[in-house]
Amino acid sequence: MPTIIFLFALLIINNAAASGMLYPRFSETRTIIEINGMWKFRADMSPTRNEGFLKKWYTQPLSQTGDVIPMPVPASYNDITQDRKLRDFIGWVWYETEFFVPVEWQQKRVVLRFDSAHYNTMVWVNSKEVLSHVGGHLPFEVQLNSSLDINGVNRLTVAVNNTLTPSTLPPGTIHYMKDTNRYPAGYFVQDISFDFFNYAGIHRSVKLYTTPIFFIDDITIVTDVKGSDGIVDYSIIGGGSSNDTTIVVEVLDADGIPVATSIKQNGQMIIRNVNLWWPFGMSKKPTAYMYTLKVVLKSSAGRDVYRQPFGVRTVKVTSTQLLINNKPFYCHGVPKHEDSDIRGKGLDYALIAKDFNLLKWLGATCIRTSHYPYAEEIMDQCDQQGIAVIDESPGVGITSVHNFGNASLTHHLEVMNEMVRRDKNRPAVIIWSVANEPLVTVPQAEHYFKSVIMHTKNLDPTRPVTFVAAVGPNGDYATKYVDILCINRYFAWYSDCGHTELIQKQVEYDMNKWREHHNIPIIVTEYGADTVAGLHQSPSFVFTEEYQVEFLSEYHAAFDKMRKKFLVGEMVWNFADFMTKEDITRVVGNRKGLFTRQRQPKMSAHLLKKRYESIMNETISVIH
Ligand code: GCB
Image (tube, rainbow, N blue to C red; front, top):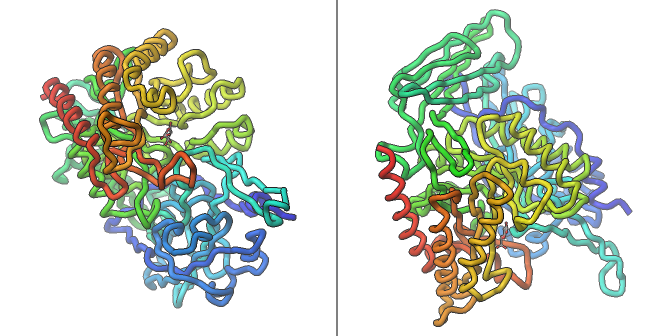
């Protein structure tokens, strides 16, 4: 019997070609239409999930293939209906919408872009396959011109498969239950080893945008600071062909005033009396100062204009410090999830605004994009509001030697290409994390993680690279390759549960041991206790708000002893409660949030606010 895994492997045809992946921005030469909204939808519930391909659903309106329901884009499809079967569905789901393009677009390059869809996506326009992409959290796009009907309606059909395999990121396995006394024939489940719900669907916006035929395809900006000068190294890649090109590159300040100009495609520009990009709370001046690189590309084929935001700042790591603009930065913040009721992991502007207001209220200076790259709209807010980011790949749940094969490694390297390509110009991104809590105590991990880390350093030599470790300090095969040590610790939760009196002793012992092995700074990227909002008990008891406060306070006392030495960050797990798979250790999701899933504070949020504000007051006095 063909399995859905087999099908999954067969159908990956032409991946989105590697080119620039600039965020679509309006300009005098570019137009964008978002084709979000209510699309038609149906899940392929056939036993092998293959009916849609056998019957070529993409060759006709989806409603003619069977019953369709309305489905919002962007959103996860899982929590939209009352149907448990759809919530827990594994396999191909089909989406469809229609669009028109203005006649004048005939003269333009028309691009169809998915900001992300989870996990494996195939796309047809007017029955013709135009694009496929593997991976859930990064954008992909294709030039559409030859597939478009400029004089009529265009039908867009999209198939998305959430099946995870040993070589996807995150990995997973399909597990067939063979005992026919206990399971119906062909019964399968998806096994995963990560702790969040595998939400699926078209998670971010779908856009049509235009560029001229000869266009700005990619921009890379690297900054440095010398005295009061900002050094801007840039390079621009053009797409299409032309032999009579001219280029004008300008740096505009936050008021739109040009402060440096060049007519070279690659080069260096100097900003005198530069305004630096500082994380929130580090500077008394307005933080997070953003410049714009305005690029005008001209040829006989026309003109293209693109404005790329960037900030001027440096990041360095010494044996004991994380330096931003050569000043010590203490990362006090939270790892998050892109998670909310109803929409799952679908892009939600209201939620983004609320979360940044809560981060500011809390006095947080940084987030980690646990455990996958977040929407570009979230990253924009980090840039603009000065929230530093540990930008994490979807390398979570790599817990078996079966995840170290060539296919896994090749895909992981490709994901790092896509992630660095997307986020390389963001000042907020200060560290790349290639994975969360992978298996690193087996020899196979060494080649794998050395390769992924070195590859990422080659892609971007300007930022520290790490992975987040769950292992103890007594020897593993991979932490020797990281620039900064990120560790997750759950003393008095997953070990010695309830014994908060042991936390300080265990944290100190653990960190001092790590320091014996690695002469690099440490960030505690997770520590936390599940807490059901509204549950109280005194003296404290696990799962109560009192326990969470007591538990976190003990960690804080330990951190304070190491803060001025080699500890350069602390991040409570988690910003807010989030959904997980059904499990006896989870009460409708993971409850380690400072905030509920509806973004109301638990007692612990007030504790953290007090702490973060007082740390910020210390730090802010350093820089004026
Ligand atoms: C971890 C994981 C995170 C989990 C958390 C927990 O170490 O990195 O994904 O949600 O522990 O609560 O168990």
